[in-house]
Length: 492
Ligand SMILES: C[S@@+](CC[C@H](N)C(=O)[O-])C[C@H]1O[C@@H](n2cnc3c(N)ncnc32)[C@H](O)[C@@H]1O
Image (cartoon, rainbow, N blue to C red; front, side, top):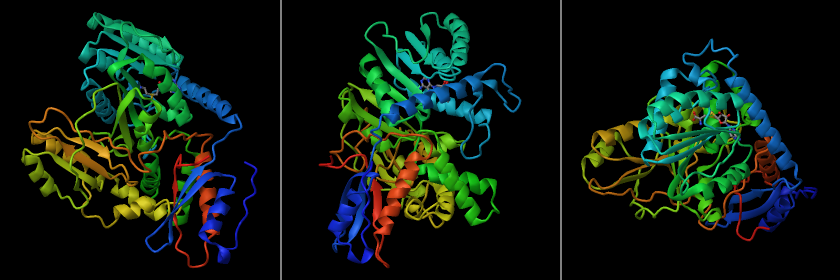
């Protein structure tokens, strides 16, 4: 971290000098230049430096302990529920409004989650970070599994889970319910779990490395054909749009500079982990037991942070590969009428890159008040403000279901503006096609390692690197796009 960064006078920069200068930057581990058809420097791929000082784990322990204290406080029975419609939903706040999520929206959120998990008909379930049992209760009632093991690192949560376990066992006597303190991962009875649920928990993990460490402990406990459900994940490429939307709604008349500063401050101070779906799609390279990764935006009619900006991922453990991928049609110009007509035919439907109407307002706010044009690129690409073809994923799925189809959703792998892909298998098709191809930066990338340290560290590091690139530009130069990746071929 002590390499001096030798700045090159803009008038003398050649591609080689650019590479040498960036390579010497203390925040950069590796760079790769990409040139356009006319030999112009169009894109720079940057692998930022990781912290190798050992401070990482100390900070991680500190972060985990801090979150434990936050949850103990939040779940404390002596705490006040004054502003809550339903005490089970303590602590659930919407990142757009900053207000408690309305009870009806929470109920829909829980139903959607339970539906996604129940679809796999699991018999032996482990839930890590089970909280107040919002999923345990309906899953046990509905599935009556052979066993349900719930763990949480909060003692108040564990006490609440134990309270719930009594009546649940009475209603479902064939289900063995175990409540464990901490993140205790007891070896399950029999051949292993067939479902591990980690729902709305990963954002409190201090880094992707910590998530990988959890998976390293969990995966040996999962029997072949089982799944790991990582639910309610934050999408890092959509955080800017969400933050900008919140500020625009809170203070529509405020000056642009004031709002831009507030958005930038919130992003800098953001202390919850966001995991790129692309990182998860690379997990099979790190964990051979993971045979497939699905990721999908959340369903639900209520326009909350969760339905707009979050997603779920399912890791398939030792499962048979689904059928080959569908033949995608361009979804950029899809209209509702065309979609309805496609759903009415019995053939397979697969539209790729559909602009997401649910995100238009947020992307527009991000474009207007984002901290930099480079970061607001997603909004531009989406055509925020002018788009006539953006469609609502929930509406499309509902229409597909009304036509008797089984729709699948995912974020478009290479999109950074929340575009989505939608597909329905042939009407008589028994299996869903595979829609899990790895997103950019490419097939040969190993699992992403993206440590996250105290709030804003990552954002500051990226900003420094962007400034270093900007400093190399000659007057009038078109700035190249800076793409942050976790690995480059041949990188040290
Ligand atoms: C937002 S709540 C989600 C609860 C539950 N999974 C649900 O979906 O209703 C997050 C829960 O994760 C727990 N948690 C957070 N970080 C954790 C960690 N590192 N290990 C175990 N539990 C954790 C918290 O105590 C809290 O109960």
